[in-house]
Image (cartoon, rainbow over all chains, first blue to last red; front, top):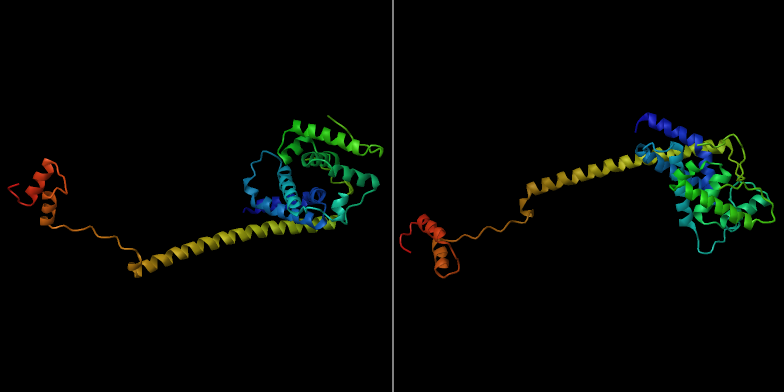
Amino acid sequence: MHPEALSDFTQLVQRHVDQWYRVALRIVLDHSSAQDCVQDASIKMWSNWSSFRGDAQRSTWAYRFVVNEALSAKRRSRPLATTDPAELAAVPDSPYFEADAMLNALYAAVAQLPEQQRLVFQFRYFDELPYADIAQILGTSQGGLKANYHHAVAKIKKTMVGLNLDLHSES
Amino acid sequence: MSLNNAAPKRRDGIYVPANFASELAERATRAGVAASHRRVRMRRLTWTATAIAAVFAGVVLNLNPQIVPAVAPAPELTVDEAWSALEQGDVTLTDDELLELAELHGITTL
C-alpha cells in the first residue's frame, strides 16, 4: 500500500476515533466491546482503503464500518435473557459515560425504538449530523430518515412525558 | 462531516479523554496495518505452497510415469479378422468404402 495512503488512514483514525468509540458504545453499550468494534472496523477500513470510490467523504465512509461492526457485535452478543445491568438499563457501561436521571431516561426510551429509528435519532440528536451524512452512513434515503426521526421523537416524547426533556423536533 | 469535536462532553453523556482517544487510535491503526500485512503474508504463503505442490507433482510424475493411469491401447485387428467381421455382417460399409478397403489390401474379387 502507498505510504501516502497509510498517512491518510492514520490521520483519519486519529481525527475520528473518539467519535467512532462514542457511536460504537451507544450501540453495544459496553466499553471493551466498543473498543473492539473500533479496532475491527479499522482493520476493515484499511483493507478496503483502495476500494473507496469517493462518492462520499472518507469520514462518512469510515462511519459505515463502525456502525456495521457495532451492529454485528450487538447481534452476536445478544443473550436470550440478558442479566447485564447496563443492558437492562440500556445505558452505556463505560468509565467515560456520565448521565443524570433525565439522560438515563432518554437512553431507556431510545432503547425501546426499532434499530433504524434508534440509529437515526442518535446520529441526529446526539451527534447533530446532517441528514445527508446519516443517509450515507446508513445507506438509506434522506426522506426515510426524516420520517424515522420524526417517529422516533414522537415515541420518545410519549415515553418521557412528564419528564420535561427538551428534544428538538423537526420534520 | 460537521462534528463538534471541541465539546468535551456531548448530549449523549460520553466524555472521551484525549489520552484514551490517542491510545485507541494507535491500537486501531496498528491493528489495521498488521491485519493487512498478515493477509499479504498469507497470500504469499498460499501461492508459494501451491507452486511448490505443483512442482513436486510434476517431478514425481516425471520420475514415475506409471502413476499416471495408462490409456487403454486401441485394439489391433488383422486383415483377416476385419474381413471376417465384414463377411459376417458385423460391419456395414458403403460401396466406396468397400472398394477402398479391397484396393488397400489387394483384394480383387468380392
